Length: 390
Image (cartoon, rainbow, N blue to C red):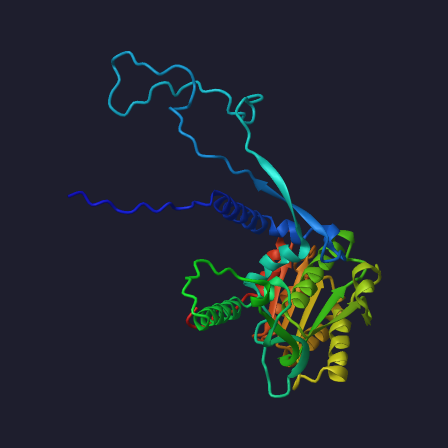
């Protein structure tokens, strides 16, 4: 006796697979181009909705072809041995340098647009503020938290409670059946669809929760030795850093300090757009940061992070003061990072002196010689810690 298995038609959603492949291509392209995106001059100061273009390789459909899919086949003289290849010499149309214009089909490339926030979300996957310490008194109340509080009949689709809606529908169905039985009606209900009255949505209320109490100091050298290229790289570094902080952490303050031979606290717009000139006392930026810390951000209650960007060209008479101030910053900071932009005089650069003489484990440094180095510098300073079990 033949036994037949019931055929169940499987709905292969081709469009869903194409969307998945497209997302993979977009994510890969963003990660491959992340260095160029983060160092793009035009993104500085732009709003979060500003879009940037990403090149994406096109997807081609699979197809069967015979050989190289060219007319004719290779034939031998009869003296060939096993493994010899026939018809491979003299191939044309490869379009390689020095061989003239090629005639092969090119690779399809198209552009897609994403927002700066979307691009930075990929950047945030691998980095975080290290050593955040949620001390007894280092947390503050944040109003940006929401909590579910019961159900309601009206709301938006993302807050639809499928389980509660199904329960309401079952209650209505059971009530209908009970009413039919009381009327001695034995009709079976074949179909009982959802109605608008069945829908239930989560009710949301604002709550307060404790958040990390942290401050980031952005210290930038704006002296005469920092030419337009160096200042662009420094501003790009701090722009991405400040965006990352504000996107990933709810309650983190950002303080901007610029310095030449003297230092001062500035607002964000002045920090990113105002040009200065003059000599360089790196210690002035560190001392100004320490002054602000003791005035407003007691290290006993605050997680403190300081980042300094300079070309390393400092007056020799200030080097010892700079190292001493850097040591003091390390004593009060969770992390103190120094990034050197396109150093010209390597033997006179302050980076070597800081690296050699500042012994604190929470001091990190990096060198940025070109715009593509920004990503590696930031990732090196803010590398995500791998916890046990991960």
